[in-house]
Amino acid sequence: MEHLTALAASNMLMAWAIPIGIVALMTVLGWIAERLTIRWVKRLTRRNHPERESVIAGALRGHITFWGFLLGLSLGLNLIYSPTPTISSPVAPVIAQYAPMLGEWYAKILTALFILSLTFMLARLAVTLIRVSAASASRPVVSLISNVAWFIMLVIGFLLVLSTLEINITPWLTAIGVAGLAVSLALQATLTDLISGMLLLGTRQIEVGDYVKLSSGEEGYVTDITWRTTTIRQLGNNQIIIPNSKMTQSSVTNYHMPQTAISVIVPVGVSYSSDLDHVERVTVEVAQDVMRSVKGGVPDFEPFIRYNNLGDYSIQFSVIMQGQEFTDQYLIKHEFIKRLYVRYHQEGITIPFPIQTVRLSGASTRATVPAPASE
Image (cartoon, rainbow, N blue to C red; front, side):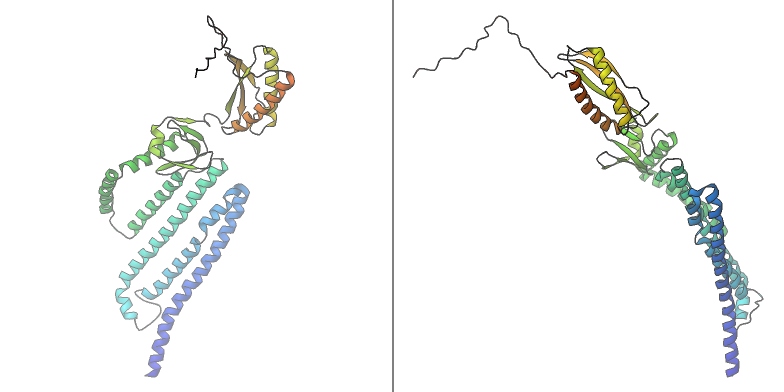
């Protein structure tokens, strides 16, 4: 009796030891295959696209090992739940009875797990490649694009899993349609922002990194466009969160379109006694020096001036220079005014200040002091 019990225990141990060993072996082989695949991908991408080396390697990491585990699990379960099991055990008759049903279900479940793993790997790879492509093109990536790509990949994977499990998706699609209608009515403003964000990206009239100013007064650098809002960073390093619908409905001045270079206009006034040709020559020389030496100036640009008004106390004109982008104008104006003041002082050119001369006609110019009141 004890001999039969020991034999049954040995058969039971053998029935589970071999499948477990197969699972462990396939997992290790999957890990080795993953290491070799990542090494081959790194070698290939380092030669052609070095910026994508870590991206592809990161997307593959962990998934191939998991696939090896699933393959080992499938082979081990085949040994246990086969209609004619190769390993005898006390539960073999029971397993043989239910083997067709069990084998069908675990095959579907393992396939569904493989599809989920593949879906997450492809979704991560798609999002990271979008970001790397945008970075290589010197264009910051928008959160809305990466989120939409991630969502589409997950939806496709979810539908494939349902198809693998032989679940009828028609009721699901009907339920999703009804739920979508209800959600669209309840979240009308949110959907409007989502569509507005897609329009902003599709028209490419506003992109991340542009300096914009809204008709309502908000201005700054666009830092991100999400599915609902556009984030603008002010020069004071504060953030403004604006709904996408407001961005599409407002009048927006984009200082980076059609190019980032911006005209820097500085108003100046000189005395009526000045030699205007001399003033023009000196002013242009100062502006040229600023363009060449100040950060943000455009060295190839030729500054010029235009007289535009005979004011009450000065002859007024505008100095036209150019900056590489919107915020460069502040440093350019700062340095130009300092250097122009020093140069005008050296050249004897007067920058007048407001003076008003009052002439009295038909009245005495002497002030009349009232007599003190008698006591």
